[in-house]
Length: 186
Image (cartoon, rainbow, N blue to C red; front, side, top):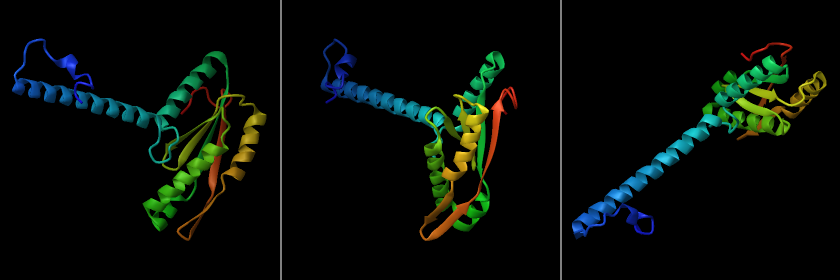
């Protein structure tokens, strides 16, 4: 099995005793396992850097990077972008009442609905806690922003039932368009 996995690349050209051969195989297999583990850890860190582990949405680091890029583009070329801050109001009380497990389920449902409500050209990310960002990169005209502002509350009704517990939370929307409101993202 070790030879099929490329072990022969690690063999020296001299004649080996059985003990040396066993040690060489163990050493090569150990290095191979260590390389695979390191590769898997790098891939997981890369994945986590771009995704929020709880909701599966883009993570804050990704959103911050995108907003910095869009802010620079708006500043240099005057190309606008839109931004909505979407916040679940009263989530702390829900967490106190239901506990973290059900509260996390509510966050995942909310994030899923927000992602489904977004246009394909827009980006949704979890900013922190119960605050999400909805970035409008393409066509952030006043009409588009208004249409999104009208549509999101209808599609984001958070009225769900878990284990016979009804959850109904309001959400707050805060729209902004750059460069009209700010030249650089906060």
